[in-house]
Image (cartoon, rainbow, N blue to C red; front, side, top):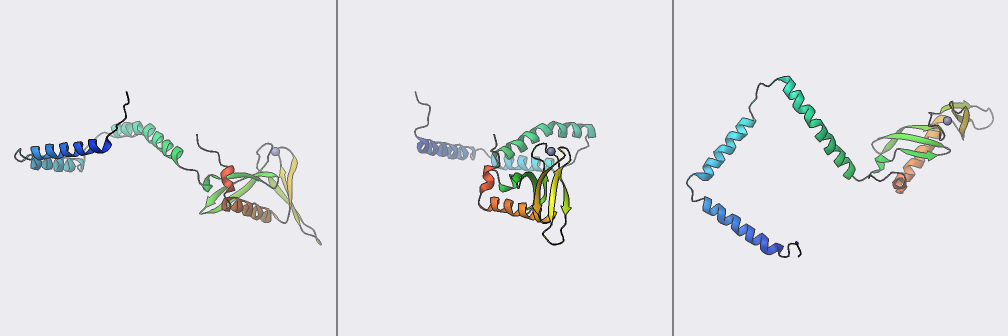
Length: 180
Ligand SMILES: [Zn+2]
């Protein structure tokens, strides 16, 4: 036997007519609606009053609410669709890079060792008659991870442009893990 409602419109009409009939019937009871309205007003005034309660009780109640709030926030975050602001890590020019956002712009961009995840340090190399270069090294692995022409700021700007490209063409979605 099917439990599906096969007459939703008919049932809605019957429910509406019944509700209207009950409300009309109640209107025959003298002062009923006025009494209900007075109770609602009293309740509203009561909610607006202050009460002396011990601080430990307030702390106890607030602490009891924390797990519920955490569950609610977790639910909201899980159901939120990923946005490009979830894209905060990627591999570029031989290293792992991480960043934050200020508006739509990646900021605090820096590189990490792809083998051990240590923050890289840089050492510029200047030439008199040719372009300078910058070496990015991992102190933990004691090795050079990559080397770029130009100074450190040029390497950061280059990666920033690559990130901006990935965001613009939608490729960032390939690097953001879908939520479970
Ligand atoms: Zn390393």
